[in-house]
Length: 146
Image 1 (cartoon, rainbow, N blue to C red):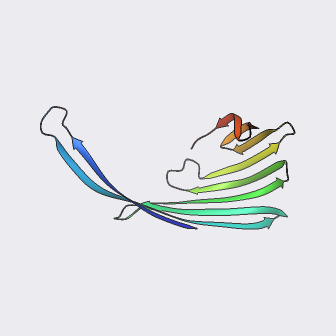
Image 2 (image 1 turned 135 degrees about the vertical axis):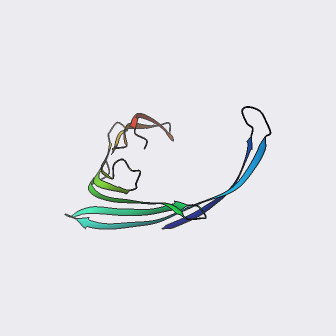
Image 3 (image 1 turned 60 degrees about the vertical axis):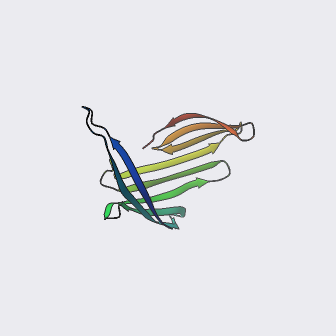
């Protein structure tokens, strides 16, 4: 899948000096370009399902590219049945501003007989969920927003 978007923006600002004086208005045209190219591949490794995905992201202005990033993931499905799903993998982040370029990932979801669901996605979140009133849900847990 390829995504391309251009967001033209016209900005206006009224500049009034703090010490008094004449106010003046500025107008500028800004263009923000964003494009991504995404790949997903399914295979088997050690008789387990593997999911590989990659994203190449480019952004910039109408003048030139300003930033190129890449994200690569490899995830192995360790267990998958009606009640339990478990995966383990690695995320590689190709970005100059990334604090950790390699991050191990783990997810676990288990549906208990009483309707509770344990939902763990490391390093992002840990939740205990319960569906209520048809389309409602109560959640208790924690989430790390990056």
